[in-house]
Image 1 (cartoon, rainbow, N blue to C red):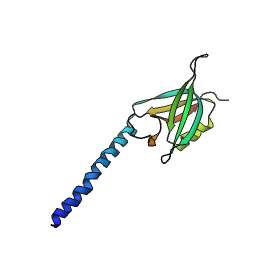
Image 2 (cartoon, helix red, strand yellow):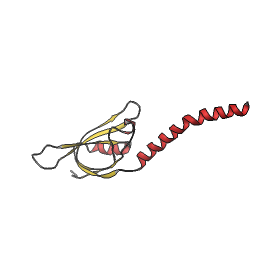
Image 3 (cartoon, helix red, strand yellow):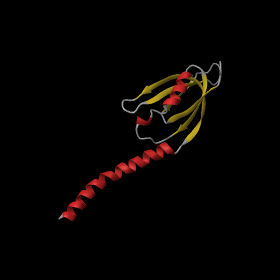
Length: 126
């Protein structure tokens, strides 16, 4: 009887744990492996902290290609508070953002976009 009770308890403890472990491994893989990486240059128009539970910094970079054409917006996410402070100090100035794209993240808790900015460089020093 005691052996059957132990098997019953182990079964109902391990069974729910398997999907949690698999989901955690999937999230780890999506945050670790980079789909693409690159740089974008332009003017940071907006940077704000968003989220109900998971706070991330969401921003817009205005890409200026040729005079007379409509500017394109590049939406990005910043997870590091120090990088967000550096970007916030350069709002309105021409910068180069270094980013990584992570595809397949299951929720917006990690950020509203799949583009995660890791660094910022000021291009036009005044």
